[in-house]
Length: 467
Image (cartoon, rainbow, N blue to C red):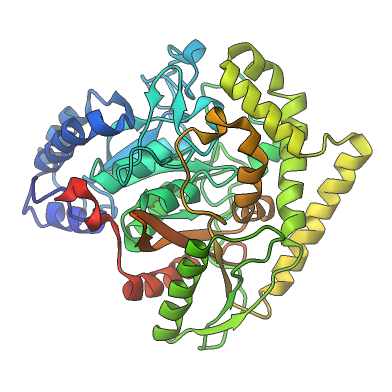
C-alpha cells in the first residue's frame, strides 16, 4: 500500500502544501487504492474521469496562501446529489442517464476548495434504507464483515473512507444516513445542524418537499474527528441557492469551564443490546478520563420524537413521492416502504398541523434541556450492525429495525447536530455512540467528540484491508 493512503485529510493537505508530495501522486495513490479495494466492496458507482487531469493542473499552479484544509485531498461524493457531467441516479435504473450541467452546493464547495473528487458512491433506491443496495449498481459491502450492512443510505461512502478510498466521504442524513454508516464501518461523522450546509439539486425538476428538506442534511464522513471538522468547514461555505442556510458559529449558550455531559444509555421503551451498553460505558469512561463531568440524564419525550419523525416523513412521502417510488422502484423497496408506512400514522390535515406544532414544542423542550447539560451522549442504534439487506430478506423485522433506530430519528426531527464516533470492536464489528449538542453548536460537539476520541482511539487501522 502507498504510504499516502493512510494519511488523514489534514496530513495529506499539509504534505501537499509543503510540496513533500504532489496532488497527482496523492490522487493516483487513492485511485490505486480504489482499484484494489472496490472490487470487494462495490462501493463506487462512477470514477471521475477528470480527477487526474485536475490534479496535474493543480500541480502546475502555485498553491494559494489561503488554501483550504482539503486542498488536493481526494474525496468521494454520493450518487444522490448533482454533479456536473455525472448522473444523479439515486440508485434507480430509470434515472441512470439523468445527467445535468450543475453542481449541488456541497459539490461546488468541495470543488472550489480544491478537493479532488475521485468517485461517486452508491446508495439504496431513493436513499431510503439502512443497507446500500439497488438494482442499478448492486450491493455495497461492509469492510469489517461482508455479511453485515455497511449502513445506509451512505453505506458506500463510509465503506470507502474506512478502506482508504478518499480521505473524506460526502453523505447525507434524513433518518440516520450519515451516523448509521459511520457506526457500521467504524468511522466518524457529524450530522450537522439544520441549515449548516446548503442543500439543493439544480438539475432536479422540483425542490424536495418541506418536511423532508427540514430533516435532511449533507455532511462529511472521515476516519477521525479532526478530518470531519475539516470536511464540515469546506462543505458549509455559503451558497445563496439555499435560502434556509444558517451560518451561526455557535448557539450562543453561555458555558462554565466545566463541561457537563448527559448520559442517556437508553431513554426509549425498547430494549438496548448489551454491546450498545458496552459502547456507552466506554464512551462515558473516556469522558471522565478526559475531565468531562458526566451525569445520568433522561432527555424529554424520546420515544415521541422518534415516532413523530416517522409520522411526519411518511405522511409527506405518501402525498409527494409515493407514486414515483411505486412507478420506478423495485418490488423490494415498495414492500419496504409499505412496512415503514404501516409503522407510522398517516396524518390528516388537522393532525399534520398539530404534529408540526408539537415538533416545535419538542424542539423547545430539548433546547431548554441544554440549559442543564452541555451535550447529550446517546446510542447511535439500540442494536449492533445487522445482516445486510435484512429488511428485504425478512420484511417482518422492519418494525423491530425501526424501533432500534429510534436514537437516529430523534435527532433528525429536532434538527440538532450530532457527532457519531466509534468506541470499540465487539464480536468482530465496530460499535459507537452519538454526541448530541444544542442547535448550531456543531463545532462545540466536535470539540467534545475529539476529546473522547483521544481517549478511545480510532478503529479503522484494525480493518484487514489495511494489513
